[in-house]
Amino acid sequence: MSSSDPPAHVTLEARAIVFDMDGLLVDSEPLWAAVEGDFARVRGAEFTAEHAASCVGRGLANTLRFMNATFGFAVDLERDARDIVDRFLSRARELVLMPGALALLDAAAAERVPVALGSSSDRRLVKAVVAAVGVADRFASVVAGDDVPRTKPAPDIFLECALDLGVEPAGCVVLEDSVAGVLAGRAAAMKVIAVPERYPGDPALADSADVVVRDLFAARRAIRFAGGGPYTASK
Image 1 (cartoon, one colour):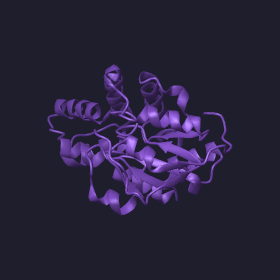
Image 2 (cartoon, rainbow, N blue to C red; image 1 turned 90 degrees about the vertical axis):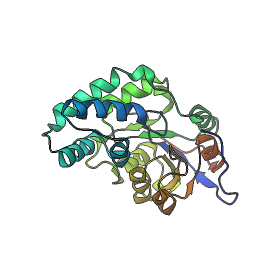
Image 3 (cartoon, rainbow, N blue to C red; image 1 turned 60 degrees about the vertical axis):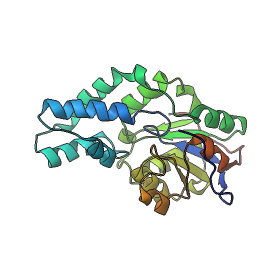
Image 4 (cartoon, rainbow, N blue to C red; image 1 turned 135 degrees about the horizontal axis):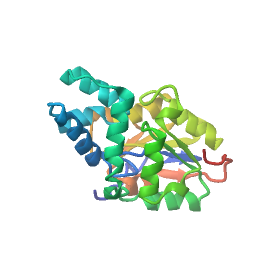
């Protein structure tokens, strides 16, 4: 990814930042596609890149339901999700942060703006991934898919992040790469910056996000920090 500036008129005030994880903070979507593809292939199905893209941001249970509906093989949500997560975590050493992620985390810390992580993945997975890429201590709140009744595109994850941080949703800026995540941020009444993995990404992103940028360096330039707000300890 290369750096790109947002439109000059777009500057979003942030009293808190909420990161998505897969495909936004961490370059994990290729590994997810490979692991899910292997899972489906053993069952005689071909889970394509297009299939994987349609499931991004909605959680592993949704992906398994998609496979059941598309390919017809039976799934056990708990058992099969555990199997896929185990496969993924066995290769966690392959994961890297997205370009600009550390710079944005450093900038938020310097401005005393609290940062949360809101992911549709389960907590076991989220904790392992942020530890693998060395940023587990950067987040004042971590909310996972199994912490809330509904995952993205419902707003539950992001609303829980705001509650943890002690910041009103309107004061939060969400960073997302998927349509489901952008819709969740919008439903939570937060400001949303879309950072699609393949810029400019799905046209639906432009319809729902406040701004679409090429990378996290450009996202940083679209944010005006308003630090010093209260926040609670990490979960």
